[in-house]
Image (cartoon, rainbow, N blue to C red):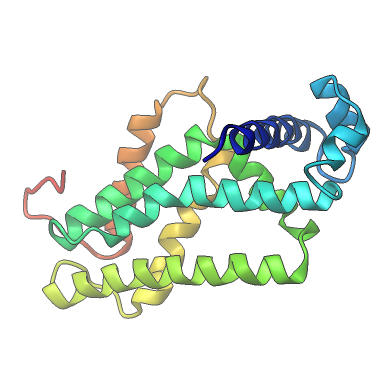
Length: 204
């Protein structure tokens, strides 16, 4: 990557970072290009050099945030090491911690999706379906091995991911549980949900 390209990417990142803060604090619809410029101390033409409008900023942000949030999670689903019990426990643990570490990103992702173009929403839905299919496949593997006991792995996968997806809404670092404790607790709940009955075993 050339120095010029690096500088350009750096400036795009500054704009996205400022927009993230404002989208979280004010919401997408109430945030203007002027607001983003003021946050950065630049003019509107500077921002328009990198993004054609506010919606382009949101779409670029979604591409980046979705990748950042789901990369580690998808990796944990794609890992074939360990039993289905161990892998589901690890998946939920990683998912919860990623959700908490990126509370601002997750909140914007869920709240502002409605402002995306139909094409971008379709792209996100396709990625989410791929994610859900991988989780359902893991649960089905656990059913086949005799570790899990559910009739419909697909429904179970949606229940597990749904349980974790909204953690950002209610988790507070001022609460009684640390991110590690909460991740461990929800991982155990996920195993209960798929009908795992350990015989004095610890999946971790």
